[in-house]
Amino acid sequence: MMKLEIDRLIPGQHYEQQYLDLMRQIWTHGDERIDRTGVGTRAVFGVTMRFDLAEDAVPLLTTKRVFWKTATREMLWFLTGDTNIRELVKQKVHIWTDWPLDKYRKETGEDIDRDIFEQRIIDDEAFALRWGDLGPVYGKQWVDWPRYTPAGEGLFRREEKGINQIAALIEGIRKNPGSRRHIFTGWNVAELDQMALPPCHKTYQFYVSGGKLSGLLYQRSCDLGLGFAFNVFSAALLIRMIAQQCDLEPGELVWNGGDVHLYLNHADLVEEQLARKPSGAPKLKILRKPESVFDYDIGDFEVQDYFPQSHISAPVAV
Image 1: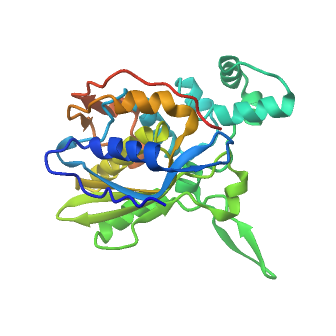
Image 2 (image 1 turned 120 degrees about the vertical axis):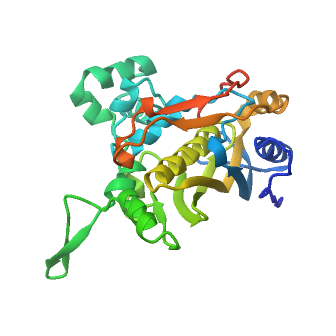
């Protein structure tokens, strides 16, 4: 197994170069494996990358266009605790459609087009309730982790309102910034089998020093060709929002990947992206400070100085 140590940027090196170096090493030297999807991957285990978030810096990839508004809408949706794709597809966010669509096709035998499926989700609330739910994924665990109280005779009752990990996190950072317990997770072992997809970006930890908030994301599984671009931007966005709510400056994003892989059917994407050179220094501006982290909307964010190269499409492995 190849060992990778990508945990420091070389002075003067573009922040994206560590990502491209990792992509090249996985594609040329990664372990070839059969995965859950049956597509097959080349993978390595255990990688760290670091991104400076000072002065509004944001780790948007420049060697291909990243649709940051789509990633932002997904993050804002997570923070609502919603688990149905209906609100996403109303905003033309298709990130999560493949999982319920695949389930619908398998269970009904109808080879329905994605656009038609999404329109039915939007138009028919009953259809959306039946086919649009993803189970207790991400945001549901973040803001409504199940809470149980004793009901007598050794039994427990599930409370109507669960634990809001995000609210508790922000309160903890404000009241006790030096704590080593600023953590939230979406990995609820008892409910994994109810989820359309168990959380990939599963655990976040935060660290306060010198008036700055840094965050560490542990990602158990990372599709480096497609998912990473969204995941790293979303993590930086969340750090920025929480820092603002806690009256702190942004520090650093530390990204830890467990199984970091490239799908074998992404050869065109990999070769095209590795032929490109990163450039520029995009900035993420937050235009207002709402009352809480749950009150941001898409109009509160602006990305400046982002001039990426063209989008590179590739199939999603479901």
